[in-house]
Amino acid sequence: MSELVPRAADPIRPAAASPLRITVDGATLEGLQGQSIAGVLLAHGRTAWRTTVAGHPRGAFCGIGVCFDCVATVNGESDVRTCMRRARDGDAVETQDDGTSNDGTEPGERP
Amino acid sequence: MSVSVLVIGAGPAGLSAAVAAADAGAMVTLLDAGDGLGGQYWRHLPPERSSVREARLHHGWPLFERLRERVAADEAITVLTEAQVWAVETTGAVTVRVLVGPADAAGREPLALAADAIVFATGAHDRTLPFPGWNLPGTFSAGAAQALAKGERIAVGRRAVVAGAGPFLLPVARSLTDAGAEVLGVYEAARPLHAAKGWLARPHRLLGAARKGPELAGYLGHHLRRRIPYRLGAAVVEARGEGRVEEAVIARLDADWAPVPGTERTVAVDAVCVSHGFTPRLELPIAAGCRTGPDRFVLVDADQRTSVPGVYAAGEITGIGGVDAALVEGRIAGHRAAGGDRSALRADLRRRRAADDVARRIEAAHGVRPGWRAWLRDDTVVCRCEEVPYGRLRDTAAATAQDSLRSLKLTTRAGLGICQARMCGRTVEELTGAAPASAADTSDQRPLAAPIRLGDLAGLATTPHGGKDTQ
Image (cartoon, chains in turn purple, yellow):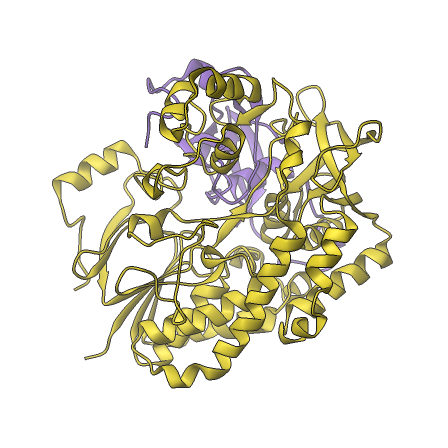
């Protein structure tokens, strides 16, 4: 299971960041200012949040914005790479199920 | 009037290019798609969570701090972060089209930036060869484990294995343990003889690689202290689990990287972190018309000049040589792009030779060998986006005797997904023998260098200069 290094146990002791809240499919998740959306999910032990056309779960894979496995709909905009997008307080994240694409486009249609 | 220089990418090569160009008298604009400087090598915590002890996670951190302070303080250097370059034109002056704002957001600010010269320092990302289960959550590229540990203090798992090929596996294992994960082993595909031939030939030359030698020695010392097994000639050949990774299957490999039957053993893990080398990020240099060599890196001359006038390249896109190579190539490229005198570069040209030597050693010791295909099964997904299995890809290639990569992609959909073949492109080429007919037919060729929303593209099309011009 993925997890955030507990601050007190972290040898580099990062500054105490202010908390933030996002919703993921309507459920509230707490995070820290400066975390990516993928980082918030991984800190809660979630390693999968997208469903592929064939119905398989996916989450973060490359972590640096190259593979697009981690995309989600953020504040109504689909296909946002969650590893590249910093979480902002109040962000509404909806996980994507590519088998039941809700924006009418085929996977891969967007350049 | 001073020369204007654009630098694309703010990792070690781009930072050193920007500083060298400013030192030579140029007005510099340094762009990076991320919201911080340092690239993947110096990936670090965001300002909200900064740490005065962050140097512990890095090599050469004081150098990064000096470069970062310099580009921030120098009035001749403008830094633009969250700046995604999506197109480049090289007819006449060099112009790049940029969207500035949060990643993948609609309505980012469009910019068109023009300059006398440009330095591409776009870096590389991991290449992960497919294996059964590599599409299960809990399998990560080794680079992801590294980026999340250094940039977010996330351990991608509690019990992890690190596997693949190359010296990069060692810092990844270290980052994981520093983030509190238990690393059960590091599995390097290269066998001892290959690794030794690559690294131990002409050892005196390694002395010239100022940072790489001590850095590698430090990691090996770390492994011995932590008692993490480091196995040569071994690989993760399968990840298993219900909906996520629960087990990794490790096997010994022969000299060609084919698994040795009967040597498989299974370990319980919750994270598998795999990298078999690096793929250069070539879409912008290719869009600019830069020639690439047979080994698929940007071709540069002694001045880091590409085949296109006014276009320079530095760092991993010219060869995987590590941080020393990136820094020195960046200095040469920035200095020359700014019109600086070549005679000032003698020491750097010498340093680059030592750095090039490291690149050759990495390839000789850890380069991908063809036996890895033996760990594929018919149902192993090769293209992650379109979920194209190996059997279908192989059979389609055989049945249609297709040797054009383009038509093979159109038939199977391999490499046509949202990542635009960044993950599987070279693997698809290798597995099908679909040799690219030309640079325009490789999987490195992408119509747009970065994803851009159709709505934004339509908006830009009606305003050809895409917002304000800097000139």
